[in-house]
Length: 414
Image 1 (spheres, rainbow, N blue to C red):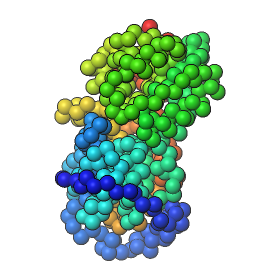
Image 2 (cartoon, helix red, strand yellow; image 1 turned 90 degrees about the vertical axis):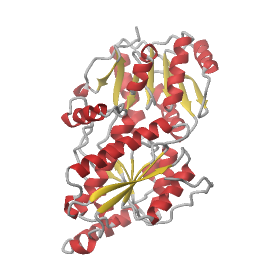
Image 3 (tube, one colour; image 1 turned 90 degrees about the horizontal axis):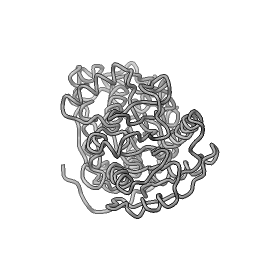
């Protein structure tokens, strides 16, 4: 589907606050319970808007999101569609944000006109902020698949939900787990340098880590920001080499992460550990398989599936059978669609207020993630948590927390 390329600012959202809306939505759910025919969609399909950056500098990740979302739609349709609506099939309506928030917002506007029942978007935090805000103008349900900025769910938008954790939770868990791993090894790491991409995701993550690392006895020697895209990390690698931090902490999108890691290897930059937080490549088998030496023993605190979950492993096997690299973008987008579809199923309708109320009250548990019970507060799943992974002998292993671990941490790097 073609997209317009004219730029447009996203106007401030002026709708009702979440808590006021949900009270009315709950009342609607009771009042309409006896009239399913009134609420039921009149078409044989339920349109779901999928907006991702499938072109531009983050197109790999955006394409992975689209793949995961479409896999979920295919699986739900194969299992009978939305049964409470007579087996209505899900229909994907595709949009390309091109990596630009204003284009993502334009796609939302067009899809609302086309009658979508809800959105799953938009990979990056900046795009997710824009798409959810635009969707809020029409009270259209919007589920964020990956975007980690806590601003996404702190604005009081009743239509906006995120099933995975935000970067506040990720940074908290990352620092706590690092403290545990470091102390178990005799506390060899006492200093760090943070390298982050320039957008909301990288900057927000770096700010949180800069505040939290000193509390566990790790001095932040420097914080280095880079542009998207960046084609040469030689200068940054030399800066790291000159300051000799014990830890290198990257927070970048896929392409830049790979290039940084390869440059560190080529420049023979030594550290006790590379400990990435939401690293765009550290938990990706594409990176591990293509550049095994650069990837070996890198640790990451990131989104990851539960390796002990039958649901997760069956989906991973099905994806890989289709030639899909099972990155976090794939299973997070899959879960975002399935989470939205479950709400539509329980609402028995595409009525926006009924679906939003169902999302807010969700206890959905068919996600295959290392999460606690699903509980939505202001649109954020409070049961969501990241895990720590490490590349060991060409495999991505979960090393923390213990109940989900498939291997023990190797630290310092050897």
